[in-house]
Length: 164
Image 1 (tube, rainbow, N blue to C red):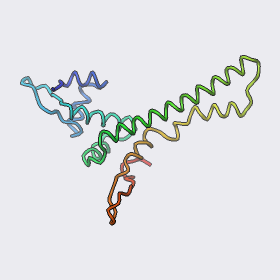
Image 2 (image 1 turned 90 degrees about the vertical axis):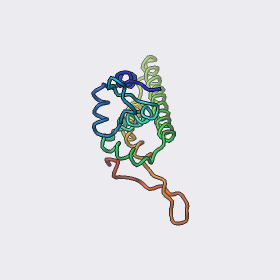
Image 3 (image 1 turned 120 degrees about the horizontal axis):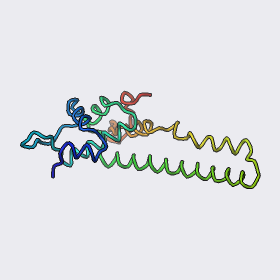
């Protein structure tokens, strides 16, 4: 099955112009063209687009994403696992913040002014993700498996892809 560029743009939340730009830069090429010349994309192209969007949302530049995808060091299941881990961490943080806010609201409603430490704990939850951004998570998933001289897998950081 193939999907036309306009439909892919709409469903991916992008513009047709963005997909054309991805083609011009070699980031995402159409799988085929219709008789009328429309760009058509197959499952593999849509999967690559998912990876592009996930890495872009993490803060990587398009040039960095292209370089990374061209080297094919990250599989789609690995990327999905990292995205799920990131979302789970965000859900935990949101739950913690919600719990803190409930404690503050209940204290205020009962006439008990929360103390300084209670407010500081709440403030700390509001910026937890600032220290571990999506970009940080992607940089962690940019760790490449390499074999050492004994045939064991070791992880080495590919820092040139991360703006540290």
